Amino acid sequence: MSLVAGSYERFIWGFKLKPTEHDPSTQTLTLTLTQLFSYPSHQGPITTVAAAGPAAASGSSDDTVQIYDLPSAASFGALHHFSSSVTALSFYCPPNLSFPRNLLSASADGSISIFDSKPFVLLKSFRAHKKGINDLAVHPSGKLALSVSRDGCLAMSNLMRGKRSFCCRLGKEATLVKFDGSGERFFMISDEKVGIHMAEDARLLFALENQKRVLCAAPGESGILFTGGEDRNITAWDTNSGKVAYSIENAHSTRVKGVVVLTKNNHDVTNEDPYLVASASSDGCIRVWDVRMAIKEKRSPLAEVDTKSRLTCLAGSSLKLKSSKRPKIGQGAPKEE
Image (cartoon, rainbow, N blue to C red; front, side, top):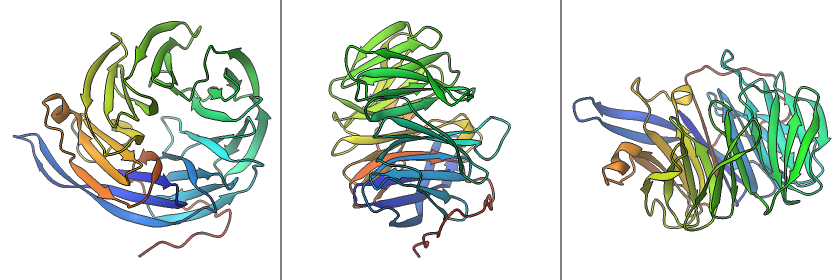
């Protein structure tokens, strides 16, 4: 399992999560975060990261996207197809493929770009919003995507045709949008409010309210949605009942900027059911939690590392696969020894 984090200081951070000890009788697991790479990969602050299989990507206010190969800790190069800051990234990886089929990016000019990952060539770029896009979510089918923007709208885009197919104005600007694992529901977040909607007709099922502004979110299994934000907590919402399942309070000393659920699809620590969640904060720390311990009120992280950077985003992927050996698209950045 690997974790990739971006920082305000332009640095990209890569870590491998490795088990050092596992006791089945006590269900205790000792983990370490080993650094894979760290270097200034952009000319401006990194705003977003994404990861799938052996590939990772980072977007920045310097109007570029950098592509990385995680197993070899190397850079594939940069994509220069943008005229404004890159605000959101998302890979689409079908279940039967080991390497993502597409990379989608959203920009501050309201446009969405679709890239083929062989070897990261631009297929289509189109305008989805009048203002900058805050977040982008790809449906598990890979056929459509949802986006929310500073224009106060929710848009649905047809990825097969490469154009916006639907747009509606919201009562308040949304900052985050996520699909659940099945694609039957999506979550839309505005400040401290979390809305759970049916994907078929956007019908609101539950309206949840956090204590403070939510800055990051990640869907888990069995209807659980993890959020983090200005309250410094990691909150697990039961989206089936509309209530808080449990919370890791004071997970960080400052606001939580990224959360990743380590599920079976991107989890190589143990063959048991996954219970691990990773978080990143503007305090510079990346921490990995066993949520079973959070339920039992034992809230010490299983692993942590201090990057001493102002972290802005976090993504995770598996490192089981060998290097993908994709053709480079630019001058690679050096690995830090």
